[in-house]
Amino acid sequence: MSPHADPRLHKPQWWKEATFYQIYPASFRDSNGDGWGDIPGILEKMPYIASLGVDVVWLSPMFESPQKDMGYDISDYEAVYPPYGTVQDVENLIEACHINGMKLILDLVVNHTSDQHKWFQESRSSKDNPKRDWYFWRPARYDEDGNRMPPTNYRSYFAGGTCESVQEQYQRQD
View 1 (cartoon, rainbow, N blue to C red):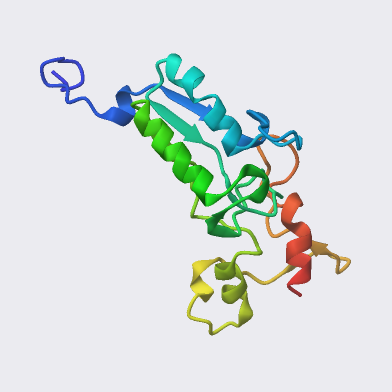
View 2: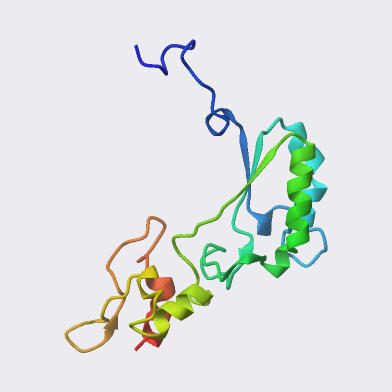
């Protein structure tokens, strides 16, 4: 019998048993009337969130970003995107979650960054840079007429090609 089929052998793991509540900061609650949801707005709603019985607040990207990829194009993992608030606001959110018996998970994607991130800038600075292999670099692609093409022909699940939003970035690398 599988250990998952026998409740006597099941070892609870919080991330498998927990109820998560995901928040995209920009569209959750605007605390200062600037048209952007923000972390102070989330803090205002903590009693409501706690009343739902959730165990974990999952905060979608809130790090510094040029916002070309909904915040997943992080330019600084140590800073908060200013319209969302400050590092202190995040620390206050952590504390509020803990006071209410919840955990906070930050949506942190470290396997891709913005072209404005210092790691990317250093990696592209020269072919012999020690951080060169932190990113994949390939020769540019051209069609039969000599026009620059996107780096891949991968299709997006949502619409269009996956590289359409970054095609200008690749054109700047020539």
